[in-house]
Amino acid sequence: MDETVAEFIRRTILRIPMNEMMSILKAWDFFFLSENQLQTINFQQRKKRLVQDLVLLCEEKCASVNYAALLDIIYTQVHQHQKVWDVFQMSKEPDEDVELFDMEQFKRSFKKILQRALKNVTVSFRDAEENAVWIRIAWGTQCTKPNQHKPTYVLHYHQTPYAFTSSPLKSLMPLLGQTFENHNSTTPLQERCLGLDVNMDSRIIHENRVEKERVQRITQESFGDYPQPQLEFAQYKFEMKFKSDLNGGILAERKESLWCLIKFSSPHLLEALKSLAPAGIADAPLSPLFTCIPARE
Image 1 (cartoon, helix red, strand yellow):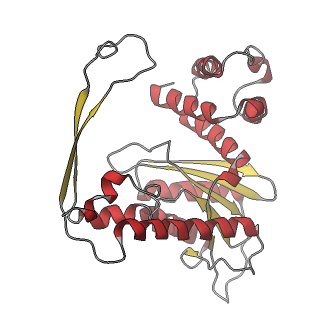
Image 2 (image 1 turned 180 degrees about the horizontal axis):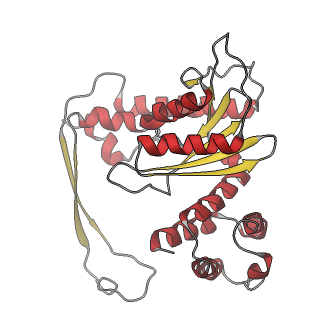
Image 3 (image 1 turned 90 degrees about the vertical axis):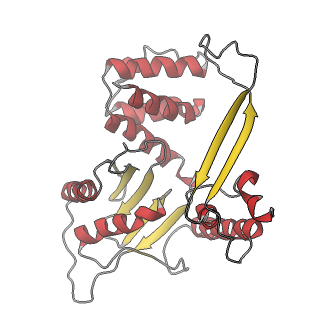
């Protein structure tokens, strides 16, 4: 098991509350850790040490990124209420017949289409109740490995035209829509107007709308609703102290501050910064380091 997978598992387990730890790990146990193996772990010790023991156990089992992704899906299923979900509707042409659904064929097709379009992408599945499937997508680029810490989650009920997505990368949504289109022979995946005629939890609709309105309001307060002055370069120089929980290291005993220089560049930097939160790439509000730029002369 390489260091990337170990860190992925470590971060996931750290997010699990202690009162849910055993139930989530048991849900994972069918696929990976057995109950006998879990019994060798002391769940009464401090969480940091517990996580270390679990990661070591996973290393002994040579855990792959797919097993780590499965644990993350299980955690997300339990805490799905903490996420903001977008709802999409796929619509067939009026003369199209309803096709028989083969879940395994759907998974193979879905994964194959994404990997053909984007070389570095990790796609994982977990079947759920009520004929639903959870899909976890970790995106990379042609030159970078998938970022396992910022995945997109998709919940799809087969034989229905609806898909629920959380944490999507807006720039990659057309690709995700094309994937559903190619498999289902439907029109492109389009965001549905979240009206009351959709049979779903009204709280999810409300949270989704309120969050979008909040982001738009904060963005307008920070940047205004006018075109931004064209700026191509920004540079920050700041002083910081080195901190680490690890013992030793060449910087552990350093008393002096470190000076850091960070540079940002773009053909239109302010418009790029203004679009980050509405695009779902960054949380709102942005750091004052960015939002203060338009107010400066």
